[in-house]
Image 1 (cartoon, one colour):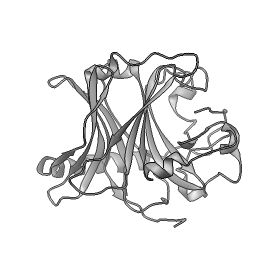
Image 2 (cartoon, rainbow, N blue to C red):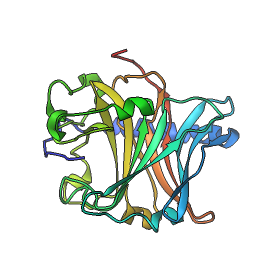
Image 3 (cartoon, rainbow, N blue to C red):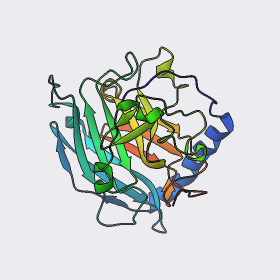
Image 4 (cartoon, rainbow, N blue to C red):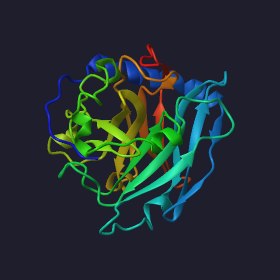
Length: 269
């Protein structure tokens, strides 16, 4: 994706962050009593990755994520003159509860992507699509700047406070990206992990954590609140937090969308 710098309209409140953190802590006992359902593993680099859905004791989904082995970070494709983005599709688990997520795509960005000095480092884009694969493949734009067009700008209630969707973020077979310019990577700090929202045809169609390879190789133990919009385009439970963690005992990484909570409002349906 491409980003054209713009000033954030608002910033996340400390109260919102505290609420999301509290939700994660409140969910912890239930996670221990529930089950984990695994999707089919896909080969990536020298390792494998698969989706997971975690439930509480009552069988309700409390977290959705990806588990991948440390080998995924090695043996990845190198960029060429014509290709530097390598997508890997991960199916959701066949068993367990259905969630708001239809499918997941891990996009290996070998050279990163614009804007310069922000996201132009090797990283993974973890796309959690709320629409079908067929709908995703039909996404098209006249140019990357279509994201700044009024025809693509989603209703304000679908965009979290502090996020903007500027020109230059429209990507075919994906969507237009909304970012939070208050993030540290836009203020001189190295990019580690961030959370992006994706849209198409005025609907919220995907959730996208992004994590740099350098940060993954540091074996992080990271968790942060997710700014939620006032409304969603599709019913279901959506994350209030996300995490990126390394398990040294099993030599695996987990990227999780956590503290799932139902959409307070669904619009555009």
